[in-house]
Length: 129
Image (cartoon, rainbow, N blue to C red; front, side):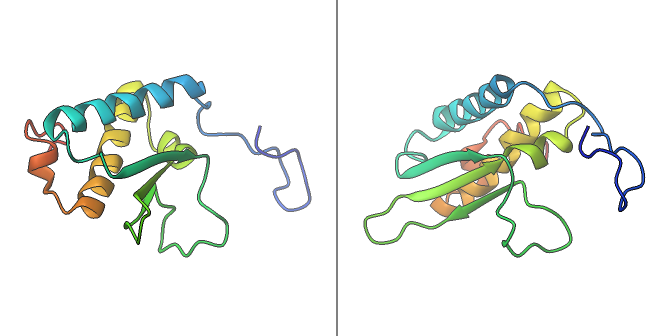
């Protein structure tokens, strides 16, 4: 249940599908990191990867909630990538889709912060282009 009955919703609001256990999501992240490291071992050497439940409330979004975000390296700081667990899970019907979406979201962000092409990071085209 997301919210009990109230004057705004009028009825109880339910999640579209249940949240997967946290370890499932983190295994998907580890698998995605492993695939990228195998294809381009140097790609993640200067990147910190983290997971947050949802983006900050104050973040500026276009018409949808982001799945991930990145910050380019500055000064002595490493590049940073954050994957947003709940938005990714809500767009995934099953573990296979979750794994694919985590991989694609991470791949796009790594490409953005490193300047490496998608084909360098994913030579076997697991992203399905």
